[in-house]
Length: 199
Image (cartoon, rainbow, N blue to C red; front, side):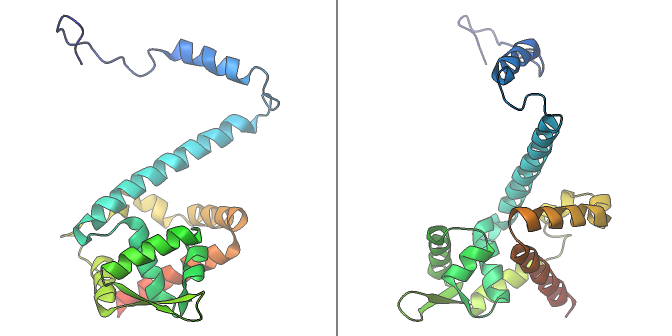
């Protein structure tokens, strides 16, 4: 970055405007009803860590799938359609926590790639089924050799993966914030993926 006379300006280091930021935050919370709530800052901290983790996971997952010409949402939809037989558009939207419009857009993009078929059932609902091409593509990603392909989840530490406390906390949070049916869907899908890789 250069100034008006062509000299390169040094980027301000993180924390250079910390005093100004603190002042702005103080003004923001001055009349906030819950400003004395001790859990407020902790809740915000937790949210920021989870949001950043989700972003990094999504970016890594998207990079992983770029070679397959799929987005993370398309791959999740494809995997769900494979493992949940007799799935309708509404079922998919509910399981993936999307609205029907999003589910419709994603499934039609998969249909255009010839990875799934969409068959009208009664004029209102649509039956979704993975094609042989779709099943082959999903299997290729799930079982691919880590020496050749690097899964986006590989950067999660062994300690985190081995910690039952982490899983229990996440499962409990999802159960109360979203619903137990989503927990069952995730656990069932992961079991089927695990069983498929062992056969």
